[in-house]
Structures are given as C-alpha cells and as structure tokens.
Image (cartoon, rainbow, N blue to C red; front, top):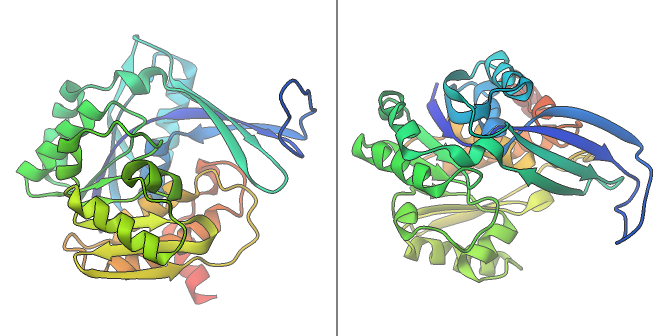
Length: 306
C-alpha cells in the first residue's frame, strides 16, 4: 500500500444540469441540480484512498458548514484530515459546474480558503510528508506552498507528482525542478510547453519539453482517447476504456489519485499504473458528481475482471 499525501483544494460543488449551454444573454431552464464534494485536491485524495492508498490531506476550509461537510467527505472515504485547518480568513472554496446533455462541462470556481494555504501550513505536515511515497499537488492552492511541500519531499528522498491544473503559464521554474512526475491534460500541456497536442508525435515533443524543464517523467492525458507516458527515453500510449460518459468532471482527478495508489516510486510500473488509472476514470465518468463517482479499488479490480 502506497502512502500518499495530497496538498490541494477543497470545494463544495453545485452541479447544474442543462440540455445545452446558454448563449450570451440567453436564459435556459435547468433539468437538474445537485450538491457534492469537489476540489481537485480533495477529489484526488479520495480517489487515492478509495483505490487503496494510505492517504493524508493538507489544506484549508472555512469556519462554516461547507468546511465541515468537506472534512466529512474526506474522513468518510478514509482520508486522514488531521492537516486540514479551519480558517476564518475566507469561506470554504466552492464551484458551480454546468453540465450539458453530452456530458461536457463548464466550471466556475471561488477559491476561498484554498488560496490561503501557506508554506507554514505545509511545515506542520513535515513528518507525514517525509514518510510518504508520493506527494501530490495541483494549482488550486498557492504555488509557494507546493514548492515548500516538494522541497520537504525531496529532502526526505520522496517522490513528487504535479498536476498543473488549472492551466497557467506562470509556473515557478523551481517547482518544475522539484517535480518527479507531471500530469497535464491537452490544454495544460499546450499552455505549459506551447506545443498543441494533435498526435503522438506532438505528445513526444511536449513531453521532451517538460523534461527539458527538469521533469523526468511525464503523463499527458487526452480524455476519451487515453494517456501518453514518457519516462526517461521510454514512452508509450495507453488507450482509454470505451464507456458511455455521464459526467466527466472528476475523470482526471480520479486518474491521478488511482495512479498514485499503485505507482512504484522508481516508476518501473508506469505503464501498468496508467492502465489502472484509465480503468478508474472509466468508472468515474459513468456517474454524476465528482466525489460520488470515484470508484473503490474493489470496483476497479472487478471491472478489469469483467
């Protein structure tokens, strides 16, 4: 069982279902509305825990009911929430997700307390970081906190995974040098490298560009097509499983969490871990909501046997 520490965001998601997205100035009726736990960090932590990892979370929520709700979402899935602080600086993060009949989404985020996470907060979790196989982070919390987490990880000879999402061109160079594995999607890859992901040749060039920035191991996820991986000079493509998608909101987060649960710290099973993560994502997209859709290890294994 891997020990995984996630530094990241916690959001309460309001999901608005529509037949199609409205045009500018247009008003449309909803066909459904629901509330669920979300935030890229929390999604990834729950995915890791449900896939079998011993998982700890570092983050912040507000002193509000939404914060209590998010902590419960973590602990109910087996995530250690000891390092989730309740802060009076802002409200708990939130997101509004508009989902159309073809399962495409549009997302608006209020970062709230996620934007208040500091390097000092990370220092409180130094012991657990030093005992983890992987430390995972995204861009929904300040990069300064992630740099500190990755510094502590490398000082303890632990591995780091960066999900550069949401996409941004403002990535601290020192953060990339502290990253052992980076996992962007197509949009994030182009933002980071300037290379449009159009085919496998482009993926190779983009992955090489990431390596030139200091990241030796790269996975580029391409939605329903699958995922490309590169480790050193070796690379390959793992096709996605074909399913009828209902909601793709947490697909990428499920992929990352599941991957971190079984990936070996020397990356020797990278291709097999990508296949496992693809299977987990294929199950997540068949249900509505971010965290409610994330599968357990038993469900992932059962789907592989089916």
